[in-house]
Length: 367
Image 1 (tube, rainbow, N blue to C red):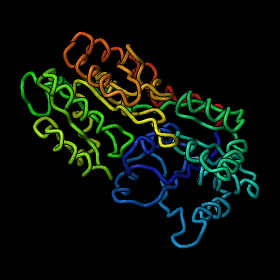
Image 2: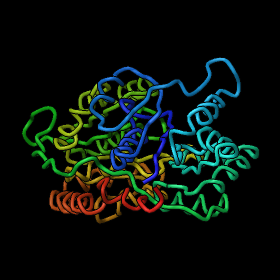
Image 3: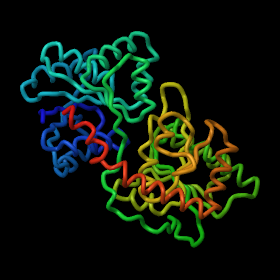
Image 4: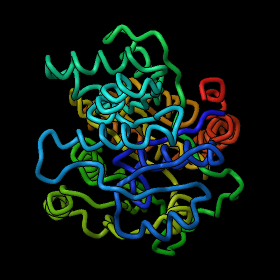
C-alpha cells in the first residue's frame, strides 16, 4: 500500500462529524498513514491513543496571504515522505494538493463533505478552481450519493467513490431508555449538533410549542446537546415559547457520555434547514442515534434521505413544515410499537452497512 499523507484542518479532538469521519479513515489505514493537523487543546492525549501517526502543525500562515500556501510548501518540503496525498475539503486543501502535484508528481485524493462543494459553486472563480482541483484528483470521495451526483454533474468529474460516515464500533449494546430526568414515563427527544441555525433547533421548539397549545404534548423532555454561536438565541426562544420546564441545553457533554445520551433517548430529531450552500450533506448523528435503536425525524433533502430512510429507520418531513414536524414528533412519542420498529431497523442497518471496515474497504483499491 502507498504511504499516505492526510492533510486536514478538522481533526479530533475537535468535535464534529467531519473530524470523526477522518479519524475513522485514518484508523482504517493506520499502518500506512501520517496525519497532519493543527494543534489544539487535548490533542496530545488523543494522538497518544490514536494508533496511527499524527503530526501537529499550523497549516495556515497567520499574516501572509493566501494563508493556505503554507500547505503547498509543506507538501513540497516533505514530498519524499509520502506517495499519495489525501486532503479534506476541495478548497483550500485541494488547491494546495493540486498546485503541489505540478512539482512533486504525487497524486492526491480529495474528500468532500457537501458544504465545501456548495460554497465553491457560489463564486465563479472558486467554482473554476474547484473544477481544476476535482478533475485533477485521482479520486473524489463523497459522503453521499447526492453529493456524488452534484460533483459529477457540476464539475464533470469522472472518478468518484461514495464512502458514508460511519460509527467506530457497533459492539456496545444499547442501554435501556431511562430518560435523563430519571422520571418513570418520561419520553425524551434529543438533538446532538452544533448550535447553528441550519440544524433546526428552533423548528423543534416551535413544534413543541404547537403541540403544547393543542394539548397533544405527552410527558416529554427535549435535550439539546452541543454548543455554538446560536446558543443564546436558542435559550431566548425557549423562554419566549414557555418551554423552560421541558427543555434542557447541555453544551458540555463529553464524547464518552454521548453513548449514554443516545441510549437514554426515545426519538432523535434534527430537522435541518435546506439553505443553499450551507446544507447538511448527510448527518452522522442520525447513524449514531440508530446505533442505539433510536429512530430519527429529519428534513427530506438529498443526502439526509440516505442517512434516514423514511418509514424504515425514521420519518422525513418537508423542509420548514412545522405542522408536519409536530405531527411526526407526536406520532413517534405516542406510538411505541412504531418507534421500536423503526429503531430496530435502524440498528440493524448500522451493523450491516455503517462500520468503518465496511465503508472504507471501498478505498483499498485506490490506496
